Image (tube, rainbow, N blue to C red):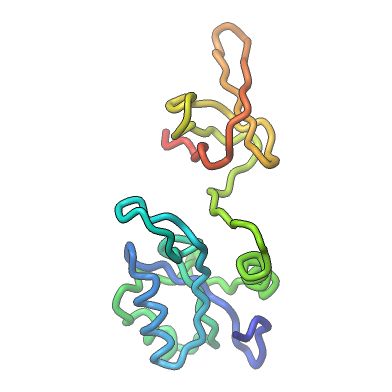
Length: 171
């Protein structure tokens, strides 16, 4: 795989239908596109087996010049929803693609996906003994530190919560 963009080529993120990442990747490769679908080992809860799952569910990356013909070819591929970008597809810096590739292919330990959170984000605990607790992310490290406050009293309490148990708050 070419991780450095040359001759006007760039990496673009493509958003797919649910569970279509591998099919879209295969179809785009059959059309001659260079595709990067980051995969990591994960448990299939229904079957109870370890398998390769997309690191970024519903996303993959395509390396191309994005001419009008290439744009149409990608857009018409079964399972493609759209390119990622505000008003038009935005190229992804080579170093970000390379970093993802190195992380997934160069580590001996397990790699886990997490939502991108920032200190101050409102989050909800979705598993464990604190399931259902809503608060604010105070620190980010190996574990997320969640601060849960009662604003009327002007007080707050905090608890250390495993990163896998925290998601952005839906409300």
